[in-house]
Image (cartoon, rainbow over all chains, first blue to last red; front, side, top):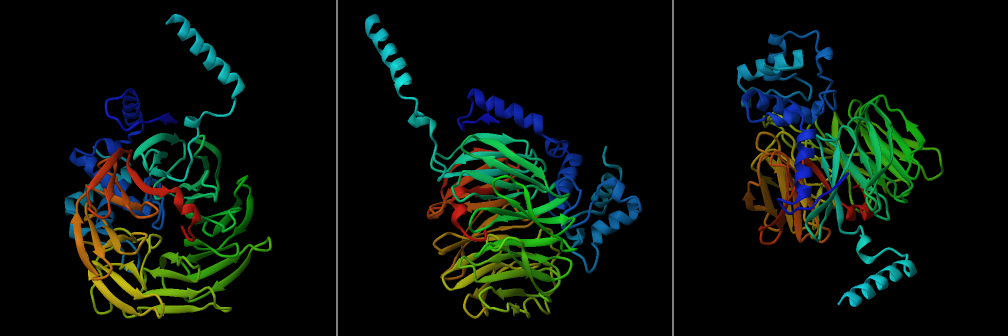
Length: 113
Length: 387
């Protein structure tokens, strides 16, 4: 726990900055690069249902060990078209096929280069 | 001059000895404080509403994605419900964690009983609801349900009400006589995703993801049963993909009407609070996530699901028209009104800020840095049912 004051430039502000950097996950820290943006989308927006850590919520666990029965092609189709009769929506209206493939790759491998 | 200094020093030391009670400035009353969930870093930011500042960061609360919290009746303790099943008790006067258990593998929220003695947690994994002693966090009751549970609220008479996502049932757990007595209400509809209870504790309203409409339960009925609300809503229209489930906890009552977010449509729905018939629809910018009434009921503030989550619309409840629209920044996740509604605090996740607005002039009044902020919870919630 640390004391925080809102005035910018004060010494506690630096401590806050240090804390921020310390706790920054890659998902948040790299969001300016295209890869960072995709990873951010997976954790923040897929995370709405699957949890920020992707270990599940209203939607199932989608960490790599839970997805071993998928290949990249099938999984990217699930992302694009959703799963009928479930809460999994089709992302095609707001996502390119290339991005869906990259997301599938990230979900299966747990990393993205 | 030197003598004078010594005199003052001596005086100061003496007063320390004879006056051991805490100095006025070390006491901070909690009535205008609040906590902001910092979802990615597992921390809470303690904020002062009147001073519009952050006072402290409290760390070590685990996975706080989709976290929520409730307050003890004395507004001293917060019970924080983490996604990872963590239940953490925080003393906001000392700004420390005073108790923490991991009570399940995956949880979605909780509630505190009307007498402040019991804290209940709604679980996804292994499902069901667990109830704990608010003082010690010891398990008081375990209610397995064989389903993910959602929409857990407190109800008068030491009751908790919740619904089963997988089975379409609502359960009322009565803890007034020690062991829970559970009343099961079947056939409330397919895939209930969230629920609310009205501030008089009478109506429990469940939103349905798997079919059109909502289901209400009259808690004053000796044999409560499902009452279908707006069963025709959305019929014949194509539902849009839902990228984020709406929340009903921030339900809005405006005069004689409820205002609720529609699922899969760019609309909010108006329902007569007496007979539960539809009284109108207002088209909105995107799919609503929260539709929150200012405490006086004159305005409803609405935020939206990804990818339209940079915008807030304000609806006037007399004309049912959008009277103000603005873009605080990317990923507006939550809005919290001050108890009397003069300000609203808005968390803007990707900007890393909580921004404060005047609700009458819509002017920005201040901002506070926060790390991936999501839920904002003022201590005034301690005295409201169902929050």
